[in-house]
Image 1 (spheres, rainbow, N blue to C red):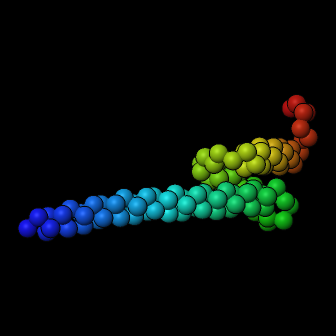
Image 2: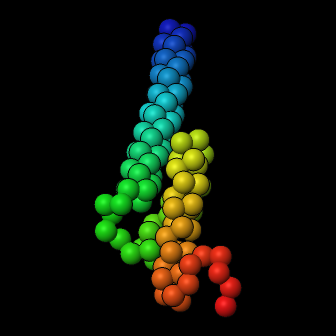
Image 3: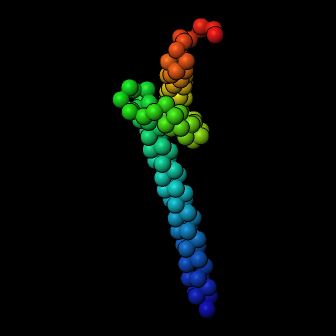
Length: 112
């Protein structure tokens, strides 16, 4: 009977130890997957921002502003993404001003 108790105790310790290692590797895999998802999100945001900076997007100003706002809503904490956002904001501001000046027949800085 004593041997059976020892065997049961050893078996219990082995199962508990295996469970701890399994839990740790699941946490590591979840962290790795989260990091990969974040990297993909950052890469997509950078690509979209670069497209908005180029003159090849073929999008209307409203669509560009909508895409920019979508990217900003992601709240990505990446220095390069933040810098690109500022550049795109500046570019879209200039485009908006040019459209307004063209629509009113005035250039920027003139008063009515």
